Length: 297
Image (cartoon, rainbow, N blue to C red; front, side, top):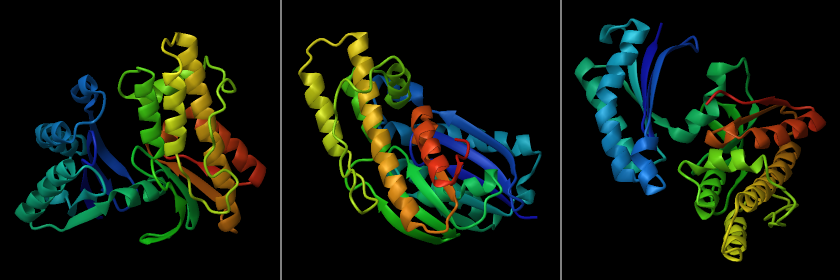
């Protein structure tokens, strides 16, 4: 049996896992860096890289212990090699390369986005092909996943990613970091119809998306309101989130039309944790008779 130790350091969380070739996660360890970045209102690449360097040694040892394995049991060492914050990627990749060289084991460079695309194969009994909506802090795109290494790009954001738009809107509302989950939380008490924010590219023939204009509209609206009470913030959050959901649903429907015969629709990435966006896409999948699958974060 092949057993791979994997290291992920592409952004602001340090992760180590051990996986075998039976799609089983034997052990894993995750360290958040929220405390390090919260004072700055967002991820600081240099701080993230130094935190990865600090946390990784103990996390690797801990993960091996959880799996009750020794280095001799490990077949290969894998690490995220991009895209992401280059400082953090260098920490993880060089650590993995050093271990691989010392053990004379193979080093496997993993594409961050490919990891998102294939994680569902570890957690669900899903076969190729399937349609993927990748929504994260830095990426938003629709793909048909036909096999390992075989991906058909249908469209994506032409400017900003969904996750980045959530974080910037949270900053405009004076919310703490990380802002995305707080937008979702306060939107529960908001009126999603109060502010008619734009839905960029809605109804267009492609699967492309755009969120910079939506962010600008939110900024202009907030600037018109020199004092924001809790209800104002909730209404802005709800109206913004509704606009995002409308855009994603419109583009997903277009992707369904392009991915003829593909019955499974996967939503992956950090923004997939947003319950409202999931609910809206779930309803869309029911209408189009698609299986909606979300791998655990």
